[in-house]
Length: 120
Image (cartoon, helix red, strand yellow):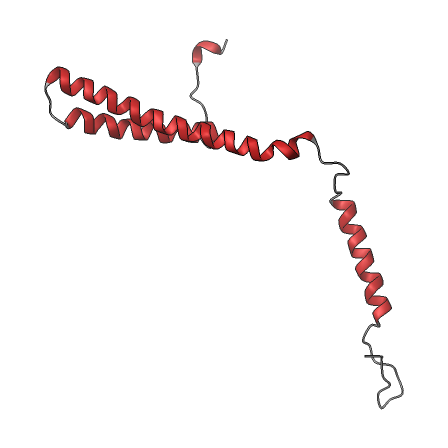
């Protein structure tokens, strides 16, 4: 809608299309300066899907391994000492907790344990 004159003879304060277009172009240029787009996708762009799949397999394997090792230790203790299902239950839960801790460490959400023998 073109600017119209009001009763006082002045043009209204609404910006015209050209001004809006110019402001939009300046904004786009300013954003491109702050966040430039890469010209060529690097070699990592095509392998990012494969990297995510590998990371998921690694995390799931560490989780399942912790549970299986805990269950195996519990079964061995139960069969050796005749303690019924209690060794299996306790070590299955400990294996679950160890699996969760391994996943968190691999994902970088929990720090690795400190080794005093390596430090000095």
